[in-house]
Amino acid sequence: KCITIKGQTVRVKWCNTCSFYRPPRCSHCSECDKCVDCFDHHCPWLNNCIGGGNYKFFLYFILFITLHSYIIMSLSIYVSVTAVDDTELRTISSVLAIVSFLCIVPLTFLEGFHFSLIFSGVTTNENLTKKYSYTKTPFNRGFCKNWCYAMYNSTRILSIIIFIKIQISYQIFIAINQACPTDNNEEKSLKIFIVAEKC
Image 1 (tube, one colour):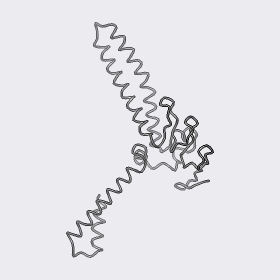
Image 2: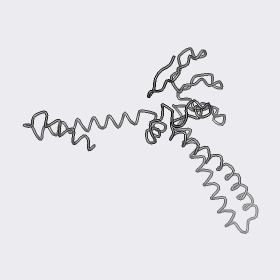
Image 3: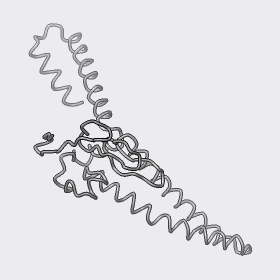
Image 4: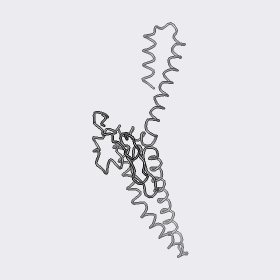
């Protein structure tokens, strides 16, 4: 089966193991033996698939481990510089600083790699299999919307924004009806439109 998304034909495959047509970006993980929505990759360190449901938590995990490593390295350097009399403490702090630095380098690159994937609207799986190019993916919503989609569970944040705008427009409609009871409907609609555009 094929479907069209933003003018591009996307193939929808049948999964023999799970017995259903996989939605776009869904892939079957051989490690977990199940289909994962918006499949990014299977993480051996976490022993779990990373996909649409937990991608933001994976990013937070990498970010906080990187920050933790920076803090440990900074404190270790500080201790090794200030602990002049204690040779054992200086040695332990120096080793800890080196190990932290060795963790920081790949973690920083990993974080940067995933940020670049988010900004271009592709997953790790799509990037590795060259399924879409960075400029031709039908799932690229633009810089800000890609970020919202990845970090705030897809359309949930956009739905909240739309709901808030509808509520504000409704409150404005009620206020204009009460303030200008003699205006005709066309003038009221124009006032509502002008105020809603400013929201």
